[in-house]
Length: 457
Ligand code: SF4
Image (cartoon, rainbow, N blue to C red; front, side, top):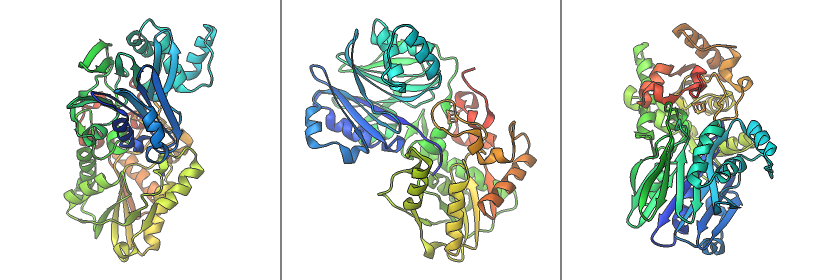
């Protein structure tokens, strides 16, 4: 589908009993954050570790789960790297997994090579792990990341003491703590905790290092956070609809984003349409919000092929496009002769939404009006959520530099995009409406995709 990608999810559990089956389920609930690789490491008289190419549910064999002994462990799903990685180091035997991106990887590697370090490859996890292992203890090692790494990360480190969990000082990536009888957990998303029948405790604070073990959660260090910069894409697209990210329900945020698009249509004279529909899956919350505000009936128009992979986590464009075609088929009966409002989270290149508009029109839709929850994407991401470039961004074909600064500019851009994707109309949320719908103060969000402002500078 889109050239967005979230490259990882992390999970950790400390339990009174064997932990592997809960960790297996935990990372299965995070599968939407990356589908190329998965892995689990547990601690029992040393680190036991198994990683796979492929999805959690299809790859782990019963014998492997039996091998992963211990009451505490960590798990990982990823688009790019096999994790967790097991290390023998001056800190003892540990395993490390992280979600994020080291945007200054080349510079860090050169610096470390100069100090005699060797790298198997330039994988981010090697950089993160080696920085941690250079220090006198795990907490000092995690704290050192904030000085040496540019980018975004949530990290879990498996040790004999338990699991150390930390979030970068801006809190780009989510990380949440949860507990249930005899269990303490940390997860990239709340859904893994909720679905394992534990209670949510709180988000890990930006810059905080937490030790998770049989004593519960202990804050081991708390670095100064210059500001929060939660990735706004989490609520619009990345996170699962049933998650709560930094205190905001993803479902609520998506409903508000869709509602805001409907409000705009109402204020601008109303839109004549028969049904509101979603591009599954991430468009569903937006479409339901649009439906509630506009009172236009909600109707599913695409049948989702649950056996196809989520396409944005495919690692090549060709793989993504092939997968996108396999993923959704049109429900002709639902769209024939209808005027459709089609809601999606964002437009990157515009090719996938073009296919969807064409599919609906081929199936007999009279009109297709596209409504987009995110404002036009104007900038690449430097923090590992997306690999897109300026050249790939549909909006940049029409606004070569700078930001959208007036309503007229937005209207002109919408008209050009509508033409390009063969829709009868296109409307985006503007940035103010987008931020208001998420419900987190603007100064606590990363909005660099839209305003070009790097929150770390
Ligand atoms: S640049 Fe965009 S995708 Fe990247 S962290 Fe910021 S808001 Fe998220």
